[in-house]
Length: 98
Image: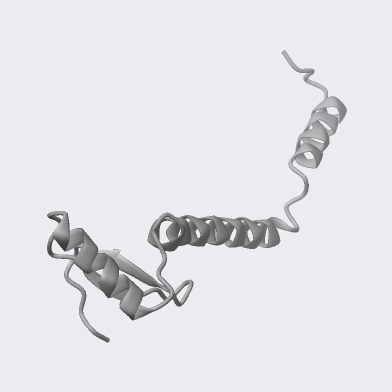
């Protein structure tokens, strides 16, 4: 149990506040945390949307891959231009032209 003296209480309070790292930069720390989370989220999105998929250099190569897949029984594939790498990927999801 802590001391009942005001000076001891004030010292403990000051030590606690100092251990928090100061409250003056709380907004800067929050902005840094948000920026870091945003970068991590974008990296995860890029990995899922682009880096984990086969990349084709041209639309022709992607269409050739679709034809090859169709010969082996996989149907319903389409190709699309990737906004991350400017290559071409295949998808089984309907894709609207933009």
